[in-house]
Amino acid sequence: MTTSQPSLSTAPLRCAIAALALTVGVFSAQAQAADDSTLRTALEAAMASDARSEADKARDKNRKPIETLEFFQLSEDMRVVELLPGSGWYTSLLAPALRDRGELFVAVGTGRVEQKLLKEPGFDKVEVLAADTKIERRKGGYGMDALNLGVKRVDLVVTFRNLHNFNVESRKIMNEAAFTALKRGGMYGVVDHTRRHMQEDDSENGRRMDPVLAIKEIQEAGFELVDFSDLHYRLDDELRYEVGRRSVSGNTDRFTLLFKKP
Image (cartoon, rainbow, N blue to C red; front, top):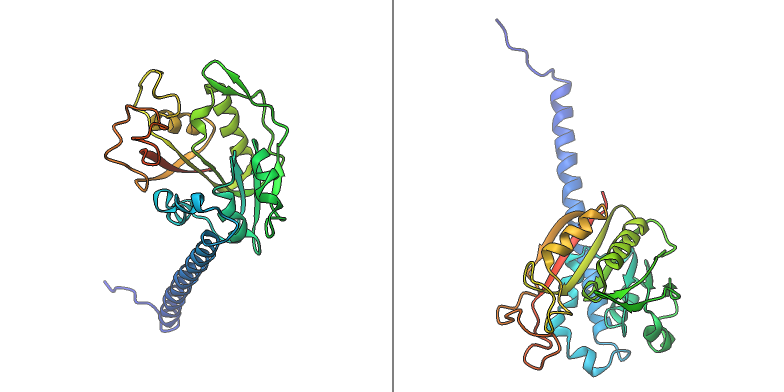
């Protein structure tokens, strides 16, 4: 019985294909490294900008924005939605980084960034979405009846320390709106203050969120959990006190989660 051997014509072809695959892999890795380096440079420049207050800059070490945004797989050519930007702490970094090759949208609760930050030079390309979404105090937290972001096929949606503010129904609305806005394969990045798992509401934990519950709710909106990070893990936060207490403020344990739209 004889064993078949590759023909002289196919053996070189296989070698050529293998070499080509290796070359493509090397170039892809080099391109990714270059993209990461360029993004980091852009974010570092934004962090040093005069558009940011000294108080905002003082929070950089604690919030680790570059590492957080890299974990969320941000790149300069993405279309990004920031949900509930607040005073614009992250907006002031995302807008310059995305200005030339990407797009940044801020959505819901945008009053403060519109009045101040978006009037500064270099922030004119940021687009405001769903600014008229009505938010009101309700049982179990703030509430909204509906949310339509009005954009499709974005690459990344992020929200920082916001889910805890809303009741169950409104978190569902927010998560579903993020899912609808994203393209297939798009990412959803979430950071929030950590609450003990399954702990009932009390006077100290209103601005904390159970990470297991957050994962459950976001998965129910259709997302897949991709990864978690311990970037904002704090061993000395006992998860007992209100996040605004002097002994806790600025040093809360925060969960950092990344999801994907399948």
